[in-house]
Image 1: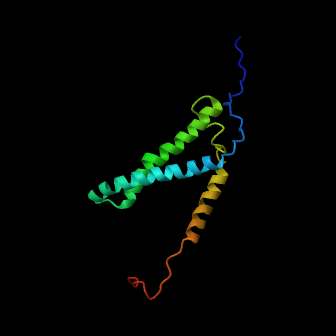
Image 2 (image 1 turned 90 degrees about the vertical axis):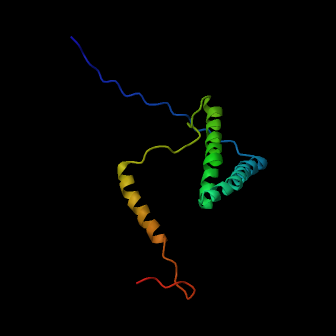
Image 3 (image 1 turned 60 degrees about the vertical axis):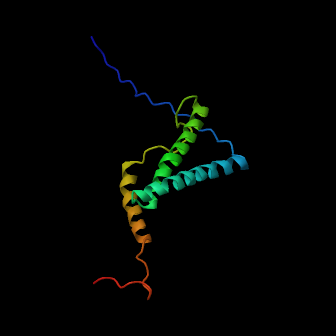
Length: 134
């Protein structure tokens, strides 16, 4: 006779959040200014190329962010995860990754969209602006 028994699902192991050590003043300054300086260097080097290709300067800024900001932020976070867990992971580094229940998602998304629409308003008209077309 074959019997079956229900086995509870295996839950993934979660890293115990460790209170991060507070940065020194020098570390905070370096972590804030170094990416900005590198982004500025890449921007000023890529802006002439964007201008030659008749692209707006914003594209050079996007390129600089893609080349410098994204790798530096992700690299730092994965480094902290490696120090915490002994492997490349964001467990214990990127906290609050639990999913929203569906009812909160359904309620919050329209609320956020309405609030964002209410906070944006058309520019005020004054005598220096061109008249709107009718």
